[in-house]
Image (cartoon, rainbow, N blue to C red; front, top):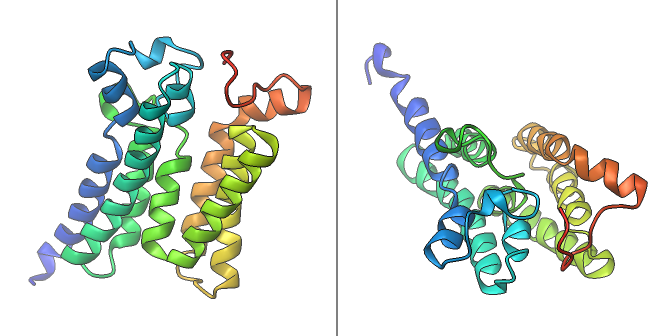
Length: 201
């Protein structure tokens, strides 16, 4: 490829990742199935936890799976089209979910999307991510705590499995997830964070 066109593949991976990541499945599903505008419910977040506050467990589960799937798909498709650029698509997909242009850059917190990304980049790390998330959610019923712990586990497990090429990316994503959960952290510390199944934000 001529030197002047070397930017095309990275740009394609970034655009693909961002467009896939920015699909607001939670908002789409709640609207299509008559559960209202998700941004006006509970915390106003577009992720699966807030979808659960509509009382529609099936929609919450679908949102979680689809948000994870778009992260996985972004990496998988980018690697198929441009080998080695899955990491770029991963970063862009995460940013697309958290800061979607279609919603004024007000998106979700990225926990499910990061799980799909980690599974696509390194499935053992993805398995650790899922197990930490499920175990802590079952034990304490704090969605925010479980999600943050799962995110933090990703760069740790990547280092453990010697996947050093993705440690910095996963660390950056984990830190952004912690930042997006800063209000949840305050509520956890003050004892006012609602557990899964509660109706408050």
